[in-house]
Length: 245
Image 1 (cartoon, rainbow, N blue to C red):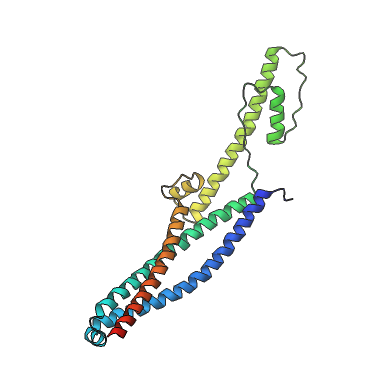
Image 2 (image 1 turned 30 degrees about the vertical axis):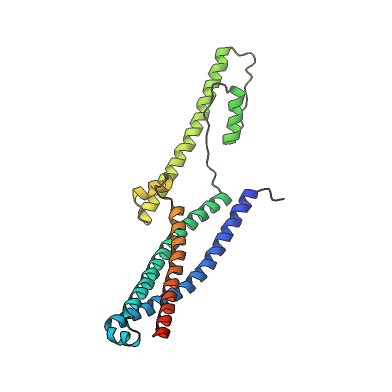
């Protein structure tokens, strides 16, 4: 049985997402080719119906306006489809990069110290145990059996100060490292202070990236179908008008 089920599941999801992305990219490449052909043909039809209106109408009476409408709709749907697909792919890259970074951090987490606040209920022995757990320090416990309450309290206060000094040193060291990272990102990647704040102090955005991602995906699929439907409907309508004429 896999002991680290959470890690196994997260890595499995990452692999599935990457495979799905490759699969969707292959599909979107095919749909792009279809839309390019439909839009190109529609633009040519618009040019023909406007530039040679009389010639077109001589073949099928009063058909130039219909050609213009269906061709324009096909072109508009196709262009909007490509815009939505571009936005979807942009959001997808950001989401996958964030998720990939999270997985890498999960698989190889840094050793970051997180101290604790010593409560009034914590006695001397508890604090000695905290030093071992939090800092891996073996602190020799003095014999306080015969100590007065005042002496025991002084020893406890001194031990608390020692624990807090270690805790503050680790916290200051972490803050220094974070500031060094910020300086490096600002110097070599040109990150603004606002960008750095969003990385190290993220806030809940008004519009979530995942919400925009799914909206653009569903919009792209819908617009692709509308583009194909508009072109197909126009062709069927022209065929019927031609047969009737």
